[in-house]
Image (cartoon, rainbow, N blue to C red; front, side, top):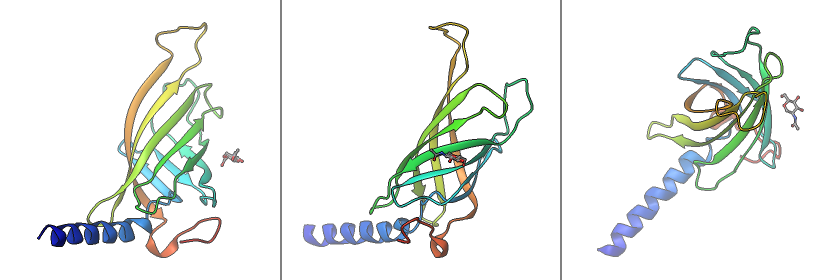
Length: 157
Ligand SMILES: *[C@@H]1O[C@H](CO)[C@@H](O)[C@H](O)[C@H]1NC(C)=O
């Protein structure tokens, strides 16, 4: 009985892995709940990637411009990999944001990126209490990477 249950659990995990293993390669276009968008180019064989972030929200005085992002993700046999990236807002602001997060695939095969970020604003002096903000965002895929169009620098699927 116990053997049968653990076999079923193992089978379930294996099929979940097979399902999500194809997904969660970050290449593609993503949008979060605020309407900010990011385009991630090809994820290289070592997991590094670059792209462009178009924020929908800003406190900067200058108008919003696309900002470059650079990051790295895990390639995880079991799926649901973690990742991180930095956005350099130099095109319109002197702030920097780092994101860290994890990709999840739900039972319908839909990917979500659960993220948390820290934004450092340029302070006039050290120890500025106001200089760092923190927040969370959830991204969903707009288009690009899906099971049939895996893109990895090393050609692996
Ligand atoms: C970071 O991303 C930008 C924009 O995509 C790219 O031009 C640059 O080469 C990247 N830098 C690194 C170190 O990958």
